Image (tube, rainbow, N blue to C red):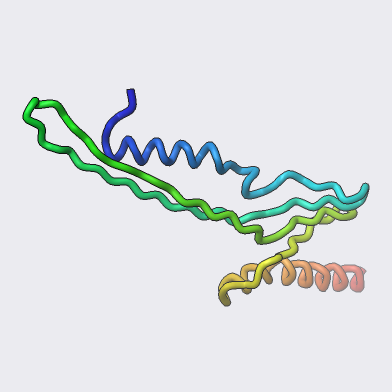
Length: 126
């Protein structure tokens, strides 16, 4: 028997959402385009919950409860991981929302450039 309370309704709602959204929703199944190129979709998942309820007085001393709950889910594709010739790159398909996100997204490119400069410096000194 299910718990008849606001927390019981919320727990049931959360469990149903868990059944709908799993890791494969965020990082999708690989798509093999050729022997050299594989693409993996990446999505952003957001969700929210609400529940409420109330106990009602009863003349028969029976506990009466009324309540409800719900959830909303949004899934937005945001990028693709591209595996080509043993290298992985991230290709964004959405516009950057803010400066902080742009900076975070630039970090892999900066690391690659610094690594390239360091490699050239090492090979030039040998």
